[in-house]
Length: 433
Ligand code: SF4
Ligand code: SF4
Image (tube, rainbow, N blue to C red; front, side, top):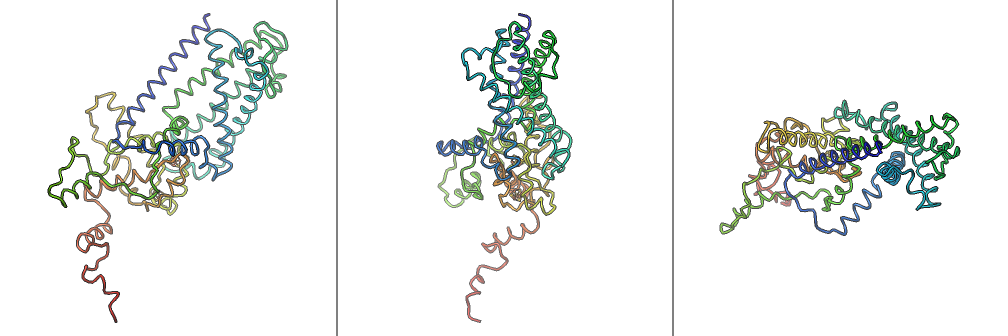
């Protein structure tokens, strides 16, 4: 009874904390401007099924795709086993699904064990790629300190969880062979039975091993759950809504700015009455709250995989720009804004902004707007949208654009074209020599 009571308290505390942190992230995302992404629901479901569920964009790098698939399937399927652990923990039962599922139960436990080994292999490969082979994609100025440790923490935790799961099963298997009370014959143990010889033969010692691993496994999973909102691994939840709300326009199509459209209409038609929707917003974005909620959702969905940066022509040619850093900076800044609201109230402003304090002007003007980053992203994130909004602010609110662009703006204003020829000379090329 005491164990059940402790388990219920721990479970309730973990679920409460997780819900609280998820609600905070949701609130932060909704600090962004509104954008309508509810059109074409059938196509949206299809994109989500293909990109998030089917992981089709991962396949461009087959080794990573296969390893990631093991971890992804392991994560989803092993949740069935976690459900059983939770019910057992609450009611004090042992392997409660074994009776109702009959023969299928043995098959499932066997399949979980095979999956656990595949997850273990994938985690070890990923750890080697990051720490021994040191793939270039996982390096960069933005990938030091916390982002570097974050990936390692989660991989090591998964190794420990899978090891605890297999050791727990091995002890259970041995106790079943000993016909020890409570440990009824249930399940098949194709992997853990191989571990059984290294465990003690004494029933009391086996019970201790089984219980320690059981508690370690479930507490580890609850800690993992509560770690997610602080980690890039939150993408395992957000990848689904993020791909559902993807931008369905052709890549490269720039959105019109409503504020500019209104001004042009008012200029061309004196009888035009603009819709009044409260305070006029900024042109472009200076801070995260000028971005849309979708941009902010993308920031929380970024897996920090670096696929965008590895194909970015600006980054490849040594410029300061890294699209991954754009997303990480946006996430860090919106988290800071959210924390400020929690501490000082919603009207507090810390005097900082995304442009300038997090992302420099050199970075945004290094972008060629090629969209390679958007194409490469496995979860349909669009760093270019954020860069474009920051540029719009720099040009339209601060009049700060590179000299080459200022020349072009002047030409458009005076000549109606980006070139430095007057409109009267435009047809000279066709005149006879
Ligand atoms: S759109 Fe900009 S940030 Fe994205 S890959 Fe091209 S140059 Fe890099
Ligand atoms: S934006 Fe996409 S491709 Fe770039 S690091 Fe994040 S998840 Fe990876």
